[in-house]
Each structure stands twice: as structure tokens, then as C-alpha cells.
Length: 119
Image (cartoon, rainbow, N blue to C red; front, side, top):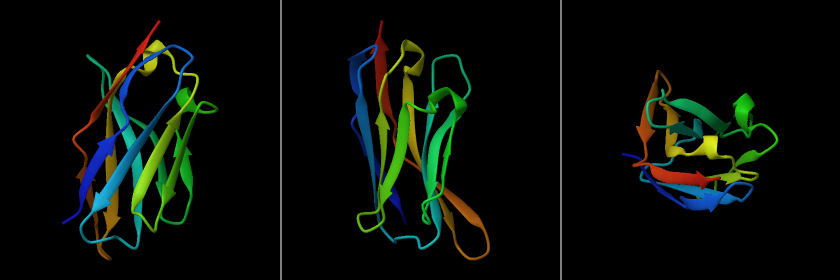
């Protein structure tokens, strides 16, 4: 059973930066996609960025050029470097691991970490 533990959220001024970390423990997956979703108050959850075990990345248009997702497969850890933060980036950020079992995908979520960007 995979578990995800996030860290790195906090309060930062607009234009600042934060780095989120998500470490996976338990049975490592050979094929998976790890990523970050966020949910702001009153809004639907949205994909921020993800990265496959092969290194392919996918980023939301709203964060392109500002956020970078990366992973260390040896450590089963995914990172989200967030630069040039804006107040509209304020949300709870959730780490997600989409794991291929060989016949279907399963999803694991972290507990969430708050990111608050002040203007």
C-alpha cells in the first residue's frame, strides 16, 4: 500500500517561491504518474502538473513557465518548484500517485498542504 507525505507549503508574498515535496512509501510502482492537484476555496480541483515514471511532464496552462515538476525515482519522491507565485495560486495542494498495476490504474492521494500567496 503506497502512502504519500507532502511537505513544503506555507505563506509567501506574491513573486516569491516555494518548493513542495511528496515522498511515497510502501510498495514502489514501476509504472506510475506522480503529480500535483490543487483546490482553492469554492473552486473545483485542478491538475497543476504531473510527471510519469518515464519523465514525461504535463503542466496546466496557468502555471507554465512558473512551476516545474520533477521526480527522483530512486527516492520515490516528486517535487513542485513554484516560482513567481501569484495570489491566485493560493490553494490546498495535493500530491497524487496514479499507479499502473498491469491491468488497471489506482490512485493514491496525500493529505494536502496549504499554499497561501499574499498580495
